[in-house]
Amino acid sequence: MSAELDAEKASDAELQELYHDVLVDYYKDTARQGRLDPHDVRAHGVNPVCGDEVELTLRLKDGKVDAVRYGGQGCVISRASTAMMTEALEGGTLADARAMALAFKAFMTAGAPPESLPEKLSESAALAGVRKFPLRVKCAMLGWNTLLRGLDDLSKGGHDAEYQDTPICQTGAQRKDMVTFKQIGDAVGPIKDPEIHVSVAELGLIYGAEIKPSDAGPGTRVKLIMSLTSPACPYGPMLLASVHGALAKIPGVRDVDVDLSFVPTWDPRTMASEEAKDQLGIF
Image 1: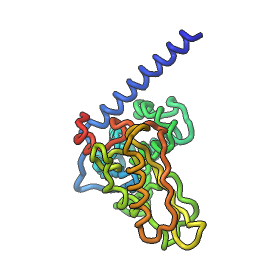
Image 2: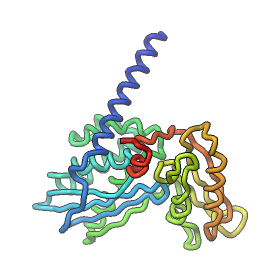
Image 3: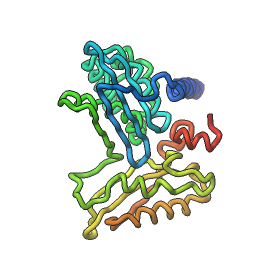
Image 4: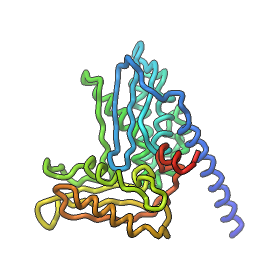
């Protein structure tokens, strides 16, 4: 029995390595990076806490997607997923695009099997492992959610859509006097890891945030979930204190919680931005 378990673990490790290679290949692919001018559809999406950002431009011809380009910045998961998406969109109709987006969403968020993915998205099965970590699912979905916003805008006669993700959750309707995710991103963005001197946002150490009205009185309660480069990082307490202090200084913030999470384990190959990997010497 032990031998069977060891064989299963080895097989799973090989599969995960294969999936990782597929994602990295798409992350590095520049075939559809850039911007189309003129274009018929433009959609811009952002996850303001983790820093992932994407701009999509589509050109239509005879009712089909003639060309699509994407730009922005983000982790390997975000950019690889967007690269897979743009490759699959070209040559299809807008109805095909929407159907693919909904199929991919069901695959990532509702546990649909890889076999349910359209043939053009077969390589998206490499993202199956991401489904174990809800915080990373948002990375994979950013490009697709931005596309859906662009298609919705086009159906109403618009050509320039904006999409903003909501990391973790935002309970209820946000009051106008509450803190925004952009303010949180602006506050923690400049903070650098004390050991390697790279921004925690660029490293991908910010896993998500939650905004609620404070239970203690007027003001906002902010909860941030982040990780460290290592569970044994000696600078952990210093970094947490810096993040807590930056959040506490945001006007309107009354309560701050900064929680550590090591699920998923931080991996600079898939979580750090391209700029951060350049600084770390990861190619």
